[in-house]
Amino acid sequence: MKEKMIEQTETFVKDKLKDDSSGHDWYHIYRVKKLALNIAEKEGADSFVCVMAALLHDIADEKIAGTEEEGLREVRNWLESIFVEEPYIKHILSIISSMSFKGGSGVEMESIEGKVVQDADRLDAIGAIGIGRTFAYSGAKGQLMYDPEIPVRETMTKEQYRNQKSTAINHFYEKLLKLKHGMNTPYAKKLANDRHAFLENFLEQFFEEWEGRK
Ligand code: ADP
Ligand code: NI
Image (tube, rainbow, N blue to C red; front, side):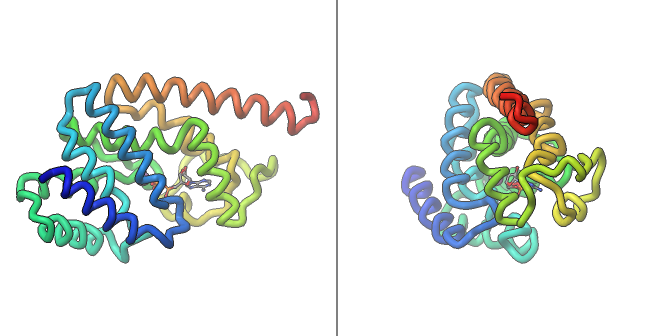
């Protein structure tokens, strides 16, 4: 029963995201789902809720839905249409409505399942995958990979985070290197430490090469 719901939801999400170019393509969802399942097993969280919230977490994003409210309504309609029980629907909706990073104003997750899915989403922004996504996003936005004359922004509003010109390398300092500190669960912290170290090694090599030293 639950397997079937997961399968149907995968098809639904794949179809919704097939034309996305905002960094929320299907394979981001695929990775977050895999990670969420792994972390859920280690942390003893409900794997059905984690997988469903992971699959649906970007559907209500403002970049995909018109507004967050419309997106959440769409998720509810979907879950009702495949007969997910009401307590699960409430839980899944509450997780995805508190998920987004939005320039720093993270909301504290109430349930262990929420913590797991948030960790999985954040992990996908760091490590080798995170580096790849950052350069892909920057290219799509027409940003340089690096410009020593554009300063790193220490504080920024949500508007500035979304709309001001930056660079791929600046994004490491404005977001990626901060994510390790926001991990909720012990297992995700462990994974984040390794991915964080990978980012630091990458930056070190990048700046050596930038100056022609390596
Ligand atoms: P979130 O799902 O956390 O809101 P975003 O939509 O902000 O993520 O970003 C999608 C992907 O693009 C992430 O890997 C993120 O790190 C990257 N990204 C977001 N903003 C920028 C930016 N200004 N420059 C480079 N990469 C970015
Ligand atoms: Ni995401």
